[in-house]
Amino acid sequence: MSMAAVVETRATSGQTKASRITGIDVLHDLASAEPIWRRLESEDSLASPYQRFDFLAPWQTEVGQHANLTPFIVTGHDASRAPLFLLPLVLKQEHGVRTACFMGGKHTTFNMGLWNREFAAAATAGDLGMIVNDLRARSMADVLALSQQPARWRGQTNPLSLLPGQASANDCPVLIMEPGAPPTARISNSFRRRLKGKERKFQASHGYRYHVAADEADIHRILDWFFRIKPQRMAEQKLPNVFAEPGVKAFIRAACLGQVAGGHAIDIHALECDAEIIAIFAGVADGERFSMMFNTYTLSENARYSPGLVLMRNIIDYYAERSYRALDLGIGSDEYKRLFCKEDEPIFDCYIPLSARGRLAAAAMSGVNRAKHLVKHNPALLQMAQRLRSAFHR
Image (cartoon, rainbow, N blue to C red; front, top):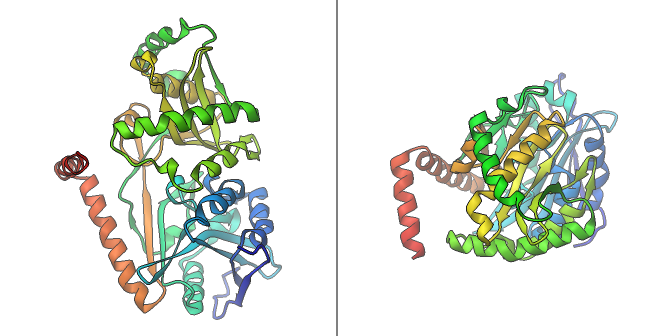
């Protein structure tokens, strides 16, 4: 892909007096988007760490290009050309339909734009309608498929929630942490005692430790182990190995090595002893929230003592000591998540047609995801679906 700037610009027309948006650009490569992207990141912006340039740029370079996904990065600015927002999208074509969706694919728990915080707080449905109408007029995409969006982030409403939307198929369990609260406010005394009892099994091993991977050699060493063990764990669960897809390992390595304020684009937490790596959790952090991306644990006898739960307790305490306010283990209601994350965070999807062809595609996408939501929130239907999946994989 050429790194020369490819920009399509159109001044907005017919905007209300209240709108600060005076122009919308569509950028088709990372190089032309990077200055705007980094400016929004460096200012007081509203965005999740999954939308950092140092996270999504390696994803697009290593994964998106392999999948023939073209950058479709929508930006808006005010009269002084100061950026107001950036939507990190890609354009894909399937079954004759051009779909604009968020960068990151399966590897982002949350999808958002990057927003000037002041503009985000004042944004109206008219502002969002202006963005959609501008994209519709350009006719470059047939449908906007904007999935897995948090309704709020850092206490502020996500402006994209002003668009027509629906509940995502899955909720996101979250642990809310009050800075300065006692440890029992995060994890009960009884659960802590159980986990400490399990941890004593590991503490008998020489060199037992919990740590966050810091240097390049350490990160490569842990990822080498992860890419060897995780496929075996996924095979046990009859799950496809998403880390074997083209470019994924290179993306993960690049993001784990990428330096951002306070750490890396992806941070790796590990339990180890001198003999082996016992468990790892990797995720993104932004100074206020940690969000887990991927994890696995040893194949040795140490697996009997719930190393993932022990590691999770360490991670929760680590971020609580740094005055973080929230922690999640990813979207979905797996039982181990509920042991720590007691509240549900609303997640929504938007399917917005931009052409006549897109109306059919948007309706189909919306219908499929409504059906998934119904199944996931009905215990009888969910059990039936799980049985059918198990039978299919036998």
